[in-house]
Length: 309
Image (cartoon, rainbow, N blue to C red):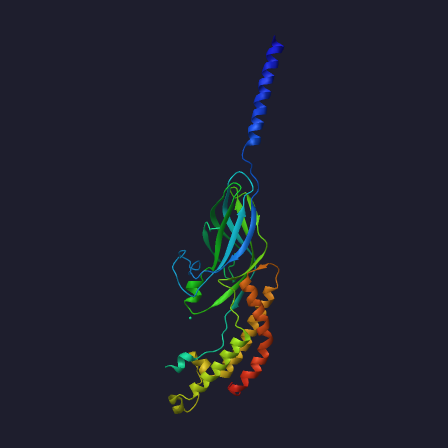
């Protein structure tokens, strides 16, 4: 009798365990999500992501930002919650913006995206944090995909630099780390090479030659201004009028700084990583202009006589 009871009980327990295993087997499966791609979206003209106080969404024509377009796939049957993004900076370099001198102003008196995140990267200097984190609130549905964008700006750029008239770009080589599952697991991208807020602008050799020609014409017109005929000598303290009073020195400085900028840009662009197509174009143009710069210098610098210092 006891053996019969134990036999029946054992059968019931085995059935319960077997049913539980079946239920567990048939339940939603969790599979590690996939980072499909981190691409470069066309930059927006919305002037955002660069102020310290708020994430601005106003429209300011003429300014854009580097935008990372992130695509995820969830092959599993449970939703995946992506909670954090970390941009880990491997290399960084500031690239100033130098332009051909211009004195025109003297003569007369430019999948639906599910979410957008604005991330401000540090400008290289004494206090430089190589990792920037930003909270996310993304859900990749079961067996589905998700797409969101990360717009890159510079921390403190608006207040400290743009308002003061100081303009530059920063080149970054970084990886994107996405945390999911409560922040206990990560997806990591390949190294990415970007220019922030945009890739440095590099004019073609033809554009530079046209600007140099215009500058020479401006200097000739400046020298014909009536009030200059009344001066006994050229001022020794040029101040803001340096490009007008000392065109040769001003142009020599432009060539020196532009050569340094181009070499710095090309050197950084050789680091391994996926490059923004716009940055790729800038690197090609920079290489061509660097080859032409000595010829442009030899062509235009003698037009302005000897150095005055």
